[in-house]
Length: 416
Image 1 (cartoon, rainbow, N blue to C red):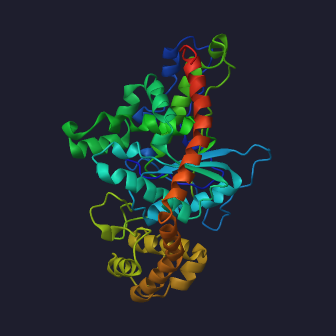
Image 2: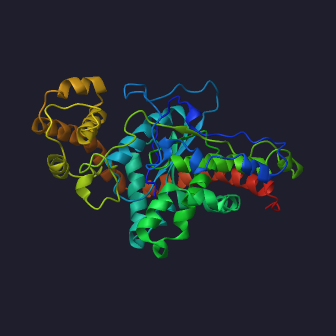
Image 3: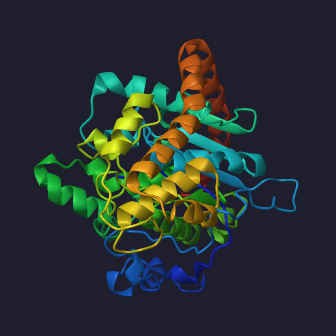
């Protein structure tokens, strides 16, 4: 199950995306389906197998974090969200939330807590509400500015679920059966322990994105395939119900949904486990030692870095495939310190692990301390947090309801 959707804009080539261009004179939806090779595994690029998603960029962390604002008075829109676990870790922060701070200055941004996604696997009912507010507080503590971005809870905007059902009626079951995450999790848990929600999770994610007519979606390693499905669903619905068909029903005609593009971060896309440099840092990993949580104390951070997995090579270096842990720890230091890759490489090339771990620990503590202080302040003002979430949900609902009404109309429902 995807835990985060990563953020940062850069110009990317979409030649990696196996696309199709359905002709409006194809004659029937079946002809449209024949043109859709997107989810035929034999036609998918090798980079999409196994791990589900590869970062297609070669830009370094020294590239500007904020893209040029489009030359228009109307800002492009970005949506992104994180599950309410209450324990946001460094991977979530570096991959997603930290980049949101830059995005909110250049784009119309909506950031939300995806609590509906959190129930696709067994969960503690008494913890869900608390974890949701904890996550929202972390968003704000990290620097999300509610004067620039809307922050809300997914379940507080009911259009998410309504659109999911409408999209489900046009989603081929074969597309969902090929989702890598569903295959992996259902294989581990067994059919009797897997809910339908885990299968239809990508349709809800598509609803989250398409509701807001999103121009861009920050994507991470484990969500790329889901974004591909979202794009194909948007094209499918536009073909089946948009254009002249919608206009004949009294609508404006044209496309019902924007087809969103991917935003891929230049660095931090995959922060790896502290205990295994080949595995992604994850909330679901059984050992808390494998991750740095944003709310970890100074002692906890120092202990985890002291015990993290390293290697027996001399010196420290980036990009050596035989040294995944070394590359991961250097990358974390680079992002925490704000230095360039070249500066870190030169600074650390002759260091031993003992010296470097002290340096890394100090940079983590210095970077996370202000966030932790602000988080405690926000959590002590529950009325303030409730008001922020309510205002965010109201703004989001205005956009979502307009899209939902268009979909109902285009699909032939009687006007509400």
